[in-house]
Image (cartoon, one colour):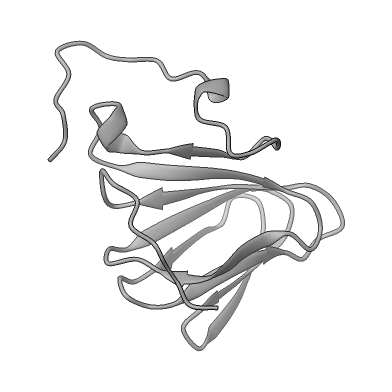
Length: 118
């Protein structure tokens, strides 16, 4: 259940960093929000391994070229593109461009639930 806050909150990027890079993991339930997200900042060849969620995920590409595999579909996306993946369908993405790739992966859940396939 989402913890409802009486006042708005500000979450600074350094509070939710993933490892030593610039990517971030925001879990909504920790901040009184009903959604969660990953902000991904990857170099060429980097990306996410094959996995699925019990809820839909939506990605918005801000920079670079990213190739998504969602089920049997392969989708190449560029800045401004939005890609969606249905619940329970395995998916992954890779920076297939020549420079930095930035995107946000929005999880339709206050808690990130992820099952790795490979």
